[in-house]
Length: 266
Image 1 (cartoon, rainbow, N blue to C red):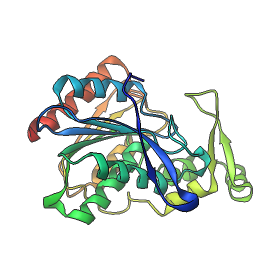
Image 2: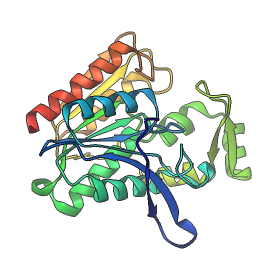
Image 3: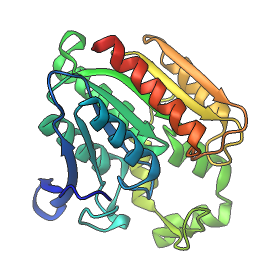
């Protein structure tokens, strides 16, 4: 992580209270900002987040990123995390820091969080007053707990273990530590399913999806594009791209996508 010192904000109340680490750069002048939302078990010090922050600073644009509870340098236990809790944190950070028109960028699970954030923000302020100027989703994974894990990945034995014991240690391709999938995560995910609804973000949406993604199949992105029937959507399929889309050419493609959206606002 860079030398910038994180700020901590408190989200939630009582036993649900947790401290969330935020990195914010106000930029220079009146320019659209960017808001980064990481993936499942990822944090704001990842390659794409860092490169986007560097780009924003070079442009003088505001940049905001944070770690979900149980991730990175934020407080709390990962096993207490749910889609609702992480969305609550994203909303709290957005409302506190992103006062300017903002491009929301969500990677993998962050794509789901971004969509839930946009739905909640639009409901609260209306389309005309929305501060979300655009959205870039990288291998977006809305409904992944149900559609990708529960329905397609988990065996009956794994499902039984989750429901009876409350957790399952899922091996990770990206870390030596397993992903702990809790019953709360699965059950809460069902309260946040959006793919079978008409999703309205109130802004143009760009989706970047690798066709060699073994975690989020590219057809999942097609399904999302269909659900976004009320918004302008550009879907780019990267033929040799994997789930991370962190190669140099992938990052340059991401920056161009964000730049194109910010240019329409600037």
